[in-house]
Image (tube, rainbow, N blue to C red; front, side, top):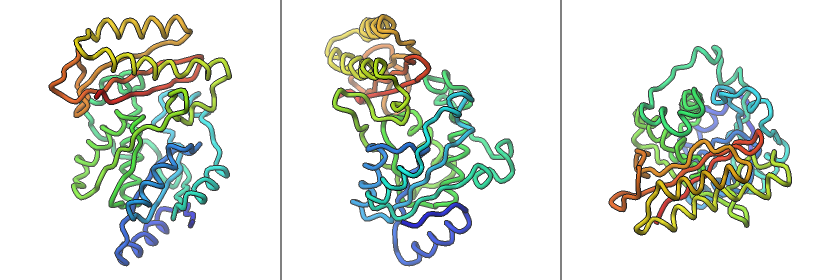
Length: 282
């Protein structure tokens, strides 16, 4: 695995690979890697991609400075995991490398409705930062295929919109299913910050999503939504949303609608740790 810290050098290296008829598969991350990230690397390899992973803890997508400062960093372990997974290239830039003119000089993008609901409503400025860094990374790496995980579903939809805005119709977006722990908890870098008692309760988010899914046949979403919210509060969580939406565009639904593909999404804090999850309804 080759490690680059400078965008220009990485760009030159990848340009040469493309000239030799290799397709670039790209996995952007913020580090603190887990099996979910590694599954994306393996998926890219399985599809014959020359695989590039980035690790960059992006300050502009944290609306909470404390969350940014406490985000887990494990670069040495991350590198070892990528080596074991057969990753071809790691891009490990500094903030100055990614924002050479300062974070306030980067172009921003209008994601419309997607920036006003759920994560957008609860984390003001978050998707502005996502758009800034992903557009910069795509410009540097110029991948043929971009690999993302379903756990951050709204972010996936924002990046899909960004690809449209940037006019990159040939860029293939692959959204891979969320990997879970044995009790159903979605794998996440933030899980490392959970105390043992918090970790024992954390799978409750997934249990709520499964309940929403199983009650869709002739059910009333408002009732199960209230049941889930009340249960989370009773167990010590601070729920931010329990939602149902059209999986195509994240238009929120007030009740089950089997005429469209549906997704149910949830966000809640336990202590200072904010967890999100979602599942597609079958």
